[in-house]
Length: 358
Image (tube, rainbow, N blue to C red; front, side, top):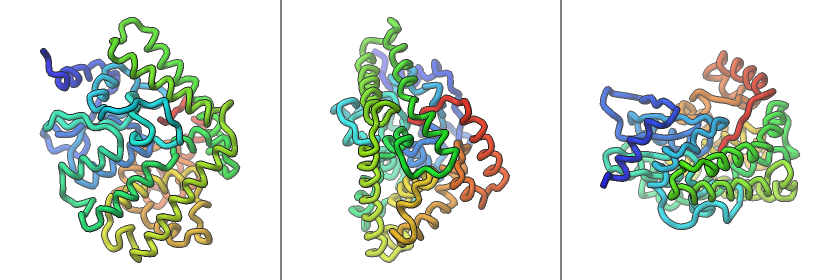
């Protein structure tokens, strides 16, 4: 019988996406990463790969195309299913596999060709790469507990719910974000239609069907909680309150260790994941949650960690869209022309693009 891992790798030639090697050295990279340009979970995993200085093979899906719903990808990703529940039973607005269950149709997915393993869930991927490639150290054992605490806080932050539910927010100032909020509030319908088309196709292998069913259930649940017709302002405020609680945890830890990083003098995986979390809050205009008046330590820290050169290369200096007003300011410090052009293009595209970011 054919080895399922090899068989899933062979199946990748059915994908319509092309891959490319990042940071290559001429040899075949050990790791492949399937990701989106613009997603927090993808940012985290790219930051770790870039911080380790590794060559890796990049497979980028475009969210509006639902490329991550292709059976060849779902087959590969399913090999990383750690067991336990599938998505569709619980909704908190976060994408944490630990609390929400396994989603077989999302990114990121890491493939380790040396160990012949598929690893899923951004938090698990980050820890996996750290274990396999210990240098440079991102999780020094001396700060193990504190780092794990912050990995969990960022993992449980309801970023997905806040993104799809943007239309419920009273904090939006940027016209671009308002246009985006309107667009993404109806994205679930397109996702459900796409999943249903795969389920209606008799050639879909029967063992993959439950995975598509779970995805449909999850998307319908999300639609009912944060979608155009289902979401409530109260529900959205609950998510914002959770974020505020997590930010105040960050404030007290920065005070306790004295900074400039979460664990003191050393930049660790905790700072890497907070870079991605603060970036998303900042770009969508939620920086009021960590203003200098409310949380002075977090405010100073955010202004510093958002400018971290290595992390920025894997997040907003990566081919990036959309570029909001806040993000344009940040990007302009490194790439003024790109910042202006991308902000302009974002404004033009948001008139008529189809977008769903998770």
